Image (cartoon, rainbow, N blue to C red; front, side, top):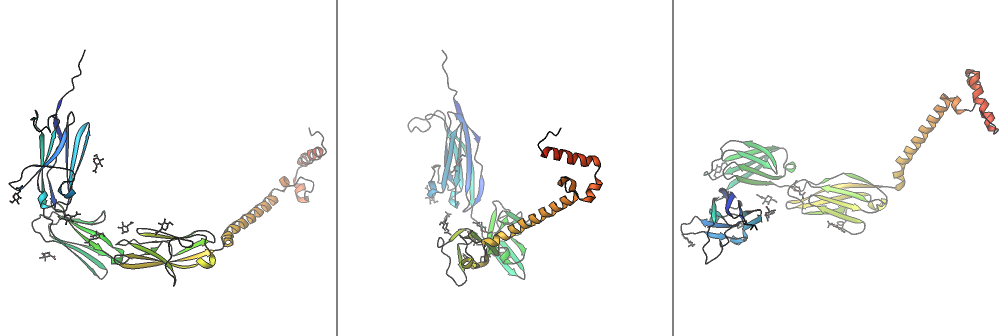
Length: 376
Ligand SMILES: *[C@@H]1O[C@H](CO)[C@@H](O)[C@H](O)[C@H]1NC(C)=O
Ligand SMILES: *[C@@H]1O[C@H](CO)[C@@H](O)[C@H](O)[C@H]1NC(C)=O
Ligand SMILES: *[C@@H]1O[C@H](CO)[C@@H](O)[C@H](O)[C@H]1NC(C)=O
Ligand SMILES: *[C@@H]1O[C@H](CO)[C@@H](O)[C@H](O)[C@H]1NC(C)=O
Ligand SMILES: *[C@@H]1O[C@H](CO)[C@@H](O)[C@H](O)[C@H]1NC(C)=O
Ligand SMILES: *[C@@H]1O[C@H](CO)[C@@H](O)[C@H](O)[C@H]1NC(C)=O
Ligand SMILES: *[C@@H]1O[C@H](CO)[C@@H](O)[C@H](O)[C@H]1NC(C)=O
């Protein structure tokens, strides 16, 4: 008999948390990974910078729910601690502890093997103030940022609009600017100036305008009885909070009333008119958008054609095809008359061109077969 002896393996780290610098209100993530048999347990402990502080264990949901711990125990153990909205008090030493000692959490027994530990420091620095400025003059927009705290060493700047990098440099100045050629209405959005410092410092500015509504098509056509679809979009910032459709001198169109269906999603709105009617539905429709800045609108003209009108192009094509077929038929008839005629009523000109033999073969079997006799 062989006894299966389980291979006992003392816990060891394969990934340790890394020290990091962060600004207040940022978040930080520390990662730890350990192996062993059995799979080790991972805990997180913290010691603040005050001299009287001692290590205290961190739990998921600690510090007014700003601490989240995500652990997995599968082949080996991994644990991520995530701290949101950092404050100066979050500065300190974070310790990842791992142990697979069966007595590790026993209060009275002292464990044979102690917990193994791996530390990282988190420095939370007070977020400096970035003064942002924006001027709009003579067809130019000038965006500027001024980092008022001289304590940071600047190694360059970057300007961004969404994910798009607009400009970069490697200057060390506290002041940076970006110039946009054109009108404010065409360049609305969120812009960012980024200082290449450790940690990175950002300034944000919003170029806000009234909704710059555009109709997908200024005039739409629909056939009587079909569904008409009118669409408006707003590409500008801030996004639209409310869309309204209305007709000249009339109340706004209520979704679901009569033959109307309105679908609005973010920056786009769609008015559907079911079973179009020539008299009732032809005319101008206005889509009006409201954002936190004010209102903007666009007009779509709808024309409803009768069912018959829709048929005209089709009838035109049919007529065209008929004319073409007729022309081809006449042309073919003129060009190869001997293949079309059976020889009985052959015009004089054709008959003279045919050889005697040809005439015979054409006429002979034709007469013979028509009488139901053998043709061989
Ligand atoms: C540590 O000392 C500070 C003052 O220096 C005090 O405010 C804090 O309560 C003390 N913390 C503990 C855990 O004793
Ligand atoms: C926890 O970690 C697992 C594995 O890495 C991941 O799939 C999951 O999304 C994480 N959960 C949270 C809340 O971060
Ligand atoms: C972040 O913490 C500050 C106070 O430290 C608080 O005023 C703010 O509301 C918090 N922000 C978030 C997003 O929780
Ligand atoms: C940047 O801010 C500092 C401090 O407020 C001020 O002294 C300086 O003039 C500003 N620089 C520019 C270019 O506006
Ligand atoms: C810019 O707009 C965003 C989104 O609407 C908002 O969260 C942010 O606070 C605004 N920033 C400023 C500086 O107004
Ligand atoms: C209009 O009503 C339809 C259902 O009748 C609904 O799907 C749609 O979201 C509504 N639109 C708006 C703008 O409320
Ligand atoms: C609306 O448009 C703005 C500016 O282009 C964009 O930032 C935002 O993501 C859009 N929102 C939706 C819901 O499409």
